[in-house]
Amino acid sequence: MKKKIIYIHGAFSAYKPNSEKVVALKQEFEVCGVNYSMEKTFEENLNSITNLCLSENADAIIGTSLGGLYAAEASSLLGVPAILINPCVEPVKSLSTIIGEQKNFTTGEVEVFTQELVNSFPNIATINSNMLVCVGLKDDLIDANITIVMAQDNNASVIQNSDADHYWEMFEHNKEISSFIENSPG
Image (cartoon, rainbow, N blue to C red; front, side):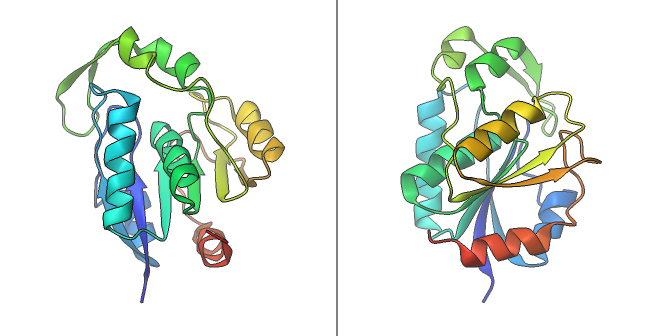
C-alpha cells in the first residue's frame, strides 16, 4: 500500500494534479492535494490543512514555497514528517513584498493580499528534525543560504540542488524523499 501524502502548493497558485512534481510523487505515493486562499489568514488556512491531514490520515506532508511553511507548521502540530521544497522560512519578510492584487498562476483569478493578512503569519517557520528541506541553490525568490542555515540549526535533513531554481521541477530525489518518509519517527 502506498503512503499517503498531502501536497501543498505555493502562493497564488492551486493544486495541479498533472504538475511535474505531483506526477513524479504519484509514482511512489498516494497524493492528496489541498488548496488554500491567499485572502484568508494564516490560521484559517493552517486549520483547514491540518484538518485535511487528520481526515486523510496523512503519512507525510509536502509543501513548496509558502506551502512549505504550511507543511512545516502542520507537521509540527501533528508530528507527521514533512518535506519542504524551497520553503518560505521568513514569511512576514517575504510576503511583505507581494502585498496587493495578484493573479493566481493556476486559476487566473485575481486575489487581494493585504498587510493585515501578512501580519497573521509567523515571523519564522518552525523547522525540526522531522523535516527534509529541499533547497534549490538557483532560487531567486527565497534565500537558499538562510533556508539551509535554519534547517541545519534545527536538525532538519537538507538536500541541496545546485541546478534547481525556486520551482524545483526536477524530482530525481524521490528515493531520498521516500526513504525519509519510511524512516521518520513521526
